[in-house]
Image (cartoon, rainbow, N blue to C red):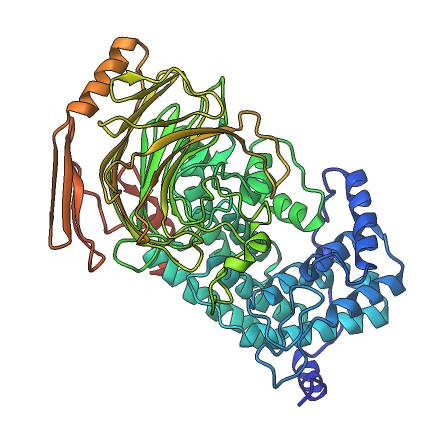
Length: 638
């Protein structure tokens, strides 16, 4: 059955009556640079007229927002654009993705695969109705109303798991905004019910898409729109509480000097340096850096955030010295992260992967002299894609002949991917012991996998054990010595990375490579001045299996060679115990604070024990220095 019947039904349900614009109560903000916006609009308009159009379907709604704000288009051109994007709605009720929208202009068959596009399109597009309804011709208004009637079907039919935070929050906002715009209380209630379920989940288990430089920004967009435009006081208050929870989390992890989100990250698309939408479009402009928001949607969200601002407490968290953060991010038993912030470094770990884009073991260095540089991060991957450039360099297309049969439709072959292995970590403030155990998966192109630690090329000293490494010019490849311990010094910060155990074949050593790599941002427009990186890589056997245990440690105040020597000696001389019996690995190091390590069954992939001088609190939500601020904010929703 085609869409005609359903349109009549939903038009009646929506009660498309006279619409009172939100614009009467909301002043539309000016973008950062109107000249750049107009140049972008002209280019986008040309792109829309190519065959096929070279502007993404969801980007058409962003384009329309700016075009209506600037009166860039004639009324008939607005109608033409709305009608064009409507051709990408799947209108056949017999198709799997009925009511959803294709991402591009050439797909056919009625199955979109990734069904999230309808959420993005409505999240952006509903602001056309809320803010510019009076600038639409009667024909354009009717066409837009028809579009939203169709996409409501798609939103209802698209299943979204509650842990898929950014899309789930978008779904809540879309229901609330559509119901409010069309005076349909039942649709608003769909949004309220979904939002209440999400609030309870987060209040008990945390945010699964935790501290993502991309998707934390998308999360707060939906919450900001609810705070600004939801007329229902109950929804407004709940969105405000959720936003306070998110901003407190982000503030605690934030590096104010460097302008980036530190800590372990879920879904970080930039392996070398994680700054993305969250920092560039929202937090950094909020903190006084340049505002580059030249699209109205982002500027609307930013203006709401700026009016709200950060609380004095949230700002104080950013500069609190030696803070230690513990947080839960899902209902699974081991989904906790820990993050310690010194003056010039921070170090973080997680005991569970969420996605093949996570940064679960990471360290950040910076100072007044070098405020931002590549992060130190561990990844296990099977593409020899050590720096995570696969997606940006189009390797998915170049290596498509290596894609395995029956590759999953949502596998992300064209994206940068690492493995999602079994893992465990015990962190005591400025040090952790980590275990990673994995097998090659459908995204690997080699028989083997690598363990790689990306490193910034801004150290004052490098040492392998007790041997100083003087040569690190481009083209060098230097294997670790028998100590399997890497030391580095940046100003008065010393770091150590010791491989305590691995399944590497005899004679295989982790090797420090300088390939002249320089990081260039490709998702957001910023220039990382100190962008050079090195890598320390261990190749695992050709059977595709990999096991590794490492001890990471950082310390400050190491301002003399004697202190650095003492730091190295303390690491090299620390007693290590390690047993492996029937696949059960028990490993620990006796640090200056006490026993630090873990016990796990590598065959069954189960975590058996954590050894920590200061046992961590697992009955928490989001804690800084032992105070659970997460429960204080979200406890009412448990």
